[in-house]
Length: 76
Image (cartoon, rainbow, N blue to C red; front, side, top):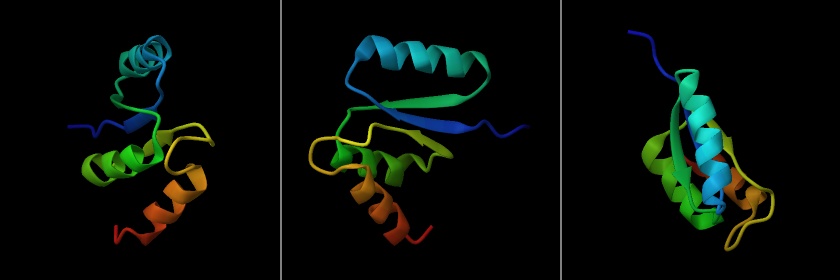
């Protein structure tokens, strides 16, 4: 069985996120939608272990640099 690429999309625009998710799913990828919030994104990354994350640079609570630092601190 082939492993699907898992993608997390952090976006508050329901229409945009769902359109992106639909397009990516049509190519056989697994997509998880997450609220555009750095702290929530970090938690989603911890629980879903995605291969790819799509997010804005500026988000409430933690920007993308804080998210990247948190990922670096994760043991995986």
